[in-house]
Length: 302
Ligand code: CP
Ligand code: NVA
Image 1 (cartoon, rainbow, N blue to C red):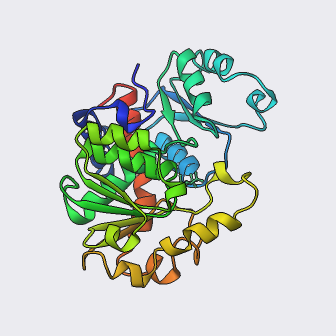
Image 2: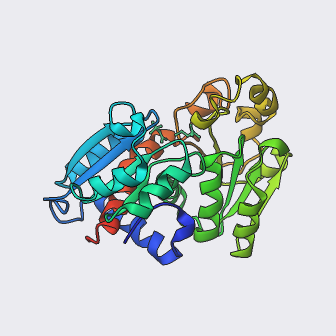
């Protein structure tokens, strides 16, 4: 079963195959309507703009059909288990995408699904985002292998997927984060054991120095919203803001990425996100193309 749950689950060649399919979709090189006759269920237990629209539009553009469910108006929201949901949906649809607050729910769904499952974000990872981010880097700056990418801010789900991407796609990743918000040491150790060059530091300037790409994300992820208010995170993360002064330490031709939604004036300034080095809207667009590659791979097409 071709699930797409985390980048760590796939070897470099398989990820490259998905990326290549996505690029070919973007270039219009894929045969017409490859998903004709296929239906994909998109389940959102958390809000979404990009993931929802890019999957829905992408599937329709490929000739497939979609059913979109939100946690609160499906029985999942009333306590039906991910396992039973998987058993039922597998009889109706050809693939399932889930965005959920707990990675354990995704794992339960996967354990009982008999169709491919795609991770549309959990508290622990956001692999679809990384496929778009790698595609975007490579469009602007060529192969990502051997390049230096700097992450500044919270060691969140997107940061964790960046660590997995660095291991699989062979780029150097420097993560600048307050020690309390660092990505799990176990994940960093795993990546290093896989041969990845990962640095984790509280020194944001040294992390960004000479990087070809600087990335950040919200200081308060959806899974952190119930933590008792954002104030302490804002205080902890303020020194990691991606602003013009910080960006000056990166390579002169560095690009800036952010998965969006942005909290302007918090993790990133208007000047940077709207500036000439920002590629954030190309990145958002590439969710559409990259996910087509993931879908075609998952469904064994193309
Ligand atoms: N980047 C991203 O996943 O955006 P949404 O939350 O809008 O889907
Ligand atoms: N880290 C963010 C990403 C949103 C797309 C969150 O989980 O809320």
